[in-house]
Each structure stands twice: as structure tokens, then as C-alpha cells.
Length: 439
Image 1 (cartoon, rainbow, N blue to C red):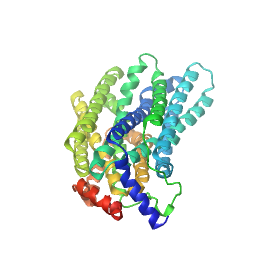
Image 2 (image 1 turned 135 degrees about the horizontal axis):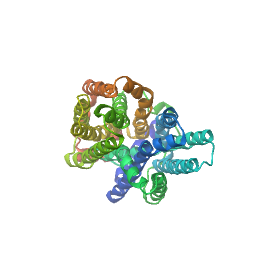
Image 3 (image 1 turned 45 degrees about the horizontal axis):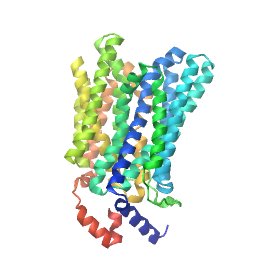
Image 4 (image 1 turned 30 degrees about the vertical axis):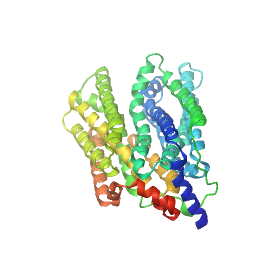
């Protein structure tokens, strides 16, 4: 791409904010928030519904983990690909592809479980089909978070970026926390109803995105590999590391919590379900408080979000390392929900602010890929460590959190806390297009 074409693209990227009206931006953010929330719920409802059904069907714990792991690997690998494609195809087509893939995968998995319960298919045939159908989620569903984050970055100034990208980036993480509660509520009507409800929700959401999500940004049909964002770009490295640690910490806590409570407090499965349910709900409420109250109202910088979230998370994990009681478990889960609610948006917004306008899709894809790392890590490493030492997964998360602090202080992230004079920026960029690349 020539220098003139690059400058023209930068001008276009800068002026998209002005081309989209405030009402359209609010509508777009609301649509994207709800759709990403549903994707997060789909990611986690499997952990609440599928394991007992799989055991009844005759599948082992290792076989169940393999289904999750393959989908998570595809998510990690393909999120950056979808992010870069959204830079060239446009955000809206990639969002639609992801939602359609999610709806088909979730509904298809529910159909397979029904067939399995009725004994229509042999177990191994059913198992192979489950792997394929769940893989559709990682294959196509990974496109929606990447393109959605880039869509918001296209339509916000630097001052608005933290709250805008934070809200969208947080929606997926919030969904992973809310998902088990949603599944439990609908499972009382029919065990597999959550799969079909989320599938229908996703497909209706895709229709709403198609009809009502505005996109005037012209896609760049030609790809310039020399200017594409790379995985090891020094601007992204700190945020990728922190995104991975956040994913590992959340996955370790959510997937180990029930076993940990049962084994350390020596209580029945019914009592465990009640305590863990209260803890998960407290975690979800704290996450909601951070994302819907603290971040919008307090206008926190990326640096403040990350520092606050890391320290709160460290305290929450530390409580799990001492003798456990019901109250201490609920407090620990609440603190970790608050910490995650601050850290995850901080990582997403920080990565977006660190790169140029034409790199937003690539940055969003890389950050989105970190969300599934924990799902891969827990079955392969955290669970074996748990069998040796029940607090082992929490110790790993504890020390990795201090690693985030070290990265934060050593990296040049402090610049993201600097205020931006929006009026001055708009005046200069409108009068001198050569300055657009700075903003």
C-alpha cells in the first residue's frame, strides 16, 4: 500500500467517529454487549450442564475435557485471524459469521445430547459428532469478540476508548460468570433447554446485528502483510501476558472451586453445590459492579484498572490459600470477581490504545484469543496439580498475578494514564490530516 493510500485510510479511520451519530453508537454498543454476553454464557454453560449428562452417557472425564480443549485451541489460534480479516472485510460480516457459528454449534450440541439420551446413536459416533459440533464454536464463534472490540475502537476517541472497549471486552467475561446460573435456572424446566435457548438467542442477535448495527467504515480489500500486527509486537506483549494470566486465574477458580470446597470442607455434594452457587453469584455481582458502575462512573485509566484489579485479585486468591470456611470462600470469590471485572477490561482497552487505527482488528483478535487459554490450561496442568496439592492451582495463579505487577511496572504502560485533550486533538486532526496517525 502506498503512503498516500495509508494516509487516506488513517483519515477515514479517524473520521468514522464523527460519521456515526451518538444514538447509533449507543445502539451499536448495546447490541454488541448483549451478543458478547451470550457468547460468554455459551462458553461456560457447558461446565454446568454437560459433565453430568456426559457421565450418564458413559463418557470419561478425559473425553469430556478433550471436547472443551479442542474448541479452546481453535479459539486461541483463529481469534487473531478473524481480527485481521475484520480489518479487510469489515467488522459487521465477521460478527455475523461468529454469531451464526455459535448458534449452530450450541443448538447442534443440544440435539446431539438429546439423541444420546434416547440411545439413537452409538456412543463413539456420538462422541465424534460432539467434538465436531463443539469445534464449530471455536472455529467461527471466535470471530465475534475480535470484530466487536475493533468495531468499538473504530468509533471512539482515545478518551472514550477505555470505557467503550472495556464494556465490550468485559461482556464476554461477564457471560462466562453468569452462564452457570442461567443454565441452572432453565435446567429446572428441561436439562437441555439452556442449549436451545442460547442458540435461538444468538441467531436472533445475528438478525438484529444485520438489521440495526451501523457500519460505514469501508473495508480494505487488499491485505498488506508488511503492516499487519504481529504476535510478538512489543506494544502488545504486556497485554497478551496479562490477558493469559487473567484467563488462567478465572478458569482455575471456576473449574476447581467445587472440588476444592468439597475436599477441604468435607461436606456433601448438595452442600457443596449451595456454597459454590452462592460464591459464583457473588463473583458475578462483583464483576457487574466493576464493569457497570466503577468503570463508567469513575473514568479510571487503564493503569488504574490494571493495578487495582491485580491487587484485589491477589487478595482474593490469598484467602483461598488459608483454612477455608463458607464465609471466607464467598469473600474470596467476591474479591476475585471484582478483580476480574477491572483487569479484563483494562487489558482489552490497553491493547486497543497501544496500536494504530488500522491495527485494531489484529489487536482485538490477539487479546480475544487469550480468553480461552485457561480452558486449555486447567485440564492439562491445573487438575493434575490439584490432585497433588489442593491449593496448587491457586498458588500458580497467585504467583502469576505478581508477574503481572512486575510487567506493569517494567513496561511503558504508564503513558496510557496520561490525559488526552479531545478538543485539541479534534481541532488538530481536522486541520492537519498528517497528525491522524497519532490518534
